Length: 114
Length: 114
Image (cartoon, rainbow over all chains, first blue to last red; front, side, top):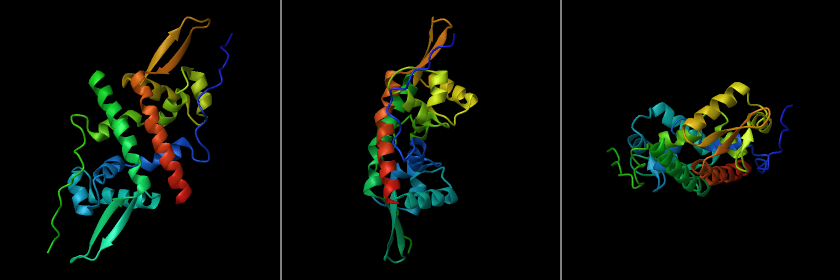
């Protein structure tokens, strides 16, 4: 006799934002690293490239425009000479930091144990 | 004159666990959904498949064994008739739940805004 399938007591993932869609906020190669690098304040493109050494200019540029479209960060063009562009976390983007910290904490302990 | 490159004041990602490696704990297609589905207690394979309708048996099986190897969940073989297998979050795996919640919250609000 097949076992009865139990109802899942976990609350359903919030709609209309599917869990997967929401997780997409931090998806994309190096997206968590870009968010992490901006935690102490705005950074320029070349500074971010130096912060995340294996990242290519092409990938960093793609990630920055995606994260900007999603509302995680904003781009400021500053009237310096030469003009410079800075990237800064939005308040909502900054709210991802504790979540990244929590995942890193768990990841760290799992790696130590397994 | 090129702009001076400023030092990044964000703390360096914790070593030896690189941010990317730690994030890998929740990587893999549907991994966050599997973790989410186990939040209220152990589930069997067929129950998890019903919880996450688009997941294939092959992908679910791959994800479960990866998450088991990483220490996020444990597999219990129960002496029911027929014998059944349940998957359950480890205490460390359960610590990922608040992080997933936080990301979902932010993702939800970003989607409402952009």
